Length: 179
Image 1 (spheres, rainbow, N blue to C red):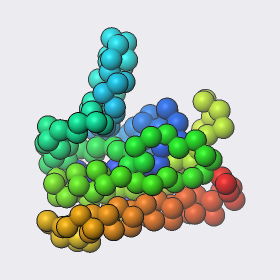
Image 2 (image 1 turned 90 degrees about the vertical axis):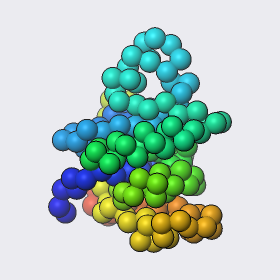
Image 3 (image 1 turned 30 degrees about the vertical axis):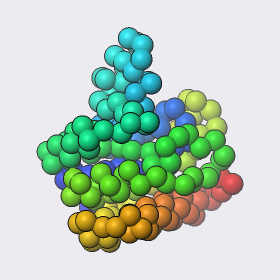
Image 4 (image 1 turned 45 degrees about the horizontal axis):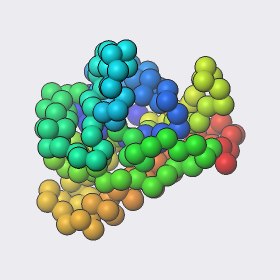
């Protein structure tokens, strides 16, 4: 698979607190930003850490256009922005939870593809995790530049299905079944 060099939205399943670091490593040769809940920035130490990790604070109760604009500007300049579309850590081993539509809406607004990534769950904090990176998905090509809500929902489900396909690729390559 050819290296992807333009801006884009990276989506991944969310299995634990080290997932952002896994994505940083997977895209080590790229400037990579992550969306993170604003609560993670509430004390000085965490604020320092997450700011240095290039995380963008997001208010999950009051998502602002400022976040959309930041993502659009970053991706326009060739950066990748990581999002966990499940919106939370999914503790059930190997499960890919329901996706929220924010990643699709950001990709549409930014006119960039979504790059799906599957992170295998880890058994211990320090253990290695396998990552499978899928091909970029042209969201506008699937639903148009100004789609109705039901088209966004269909594309969101399509992207979740791609994530499940990546999980199956991981299982086939490793002989592991996380369920």
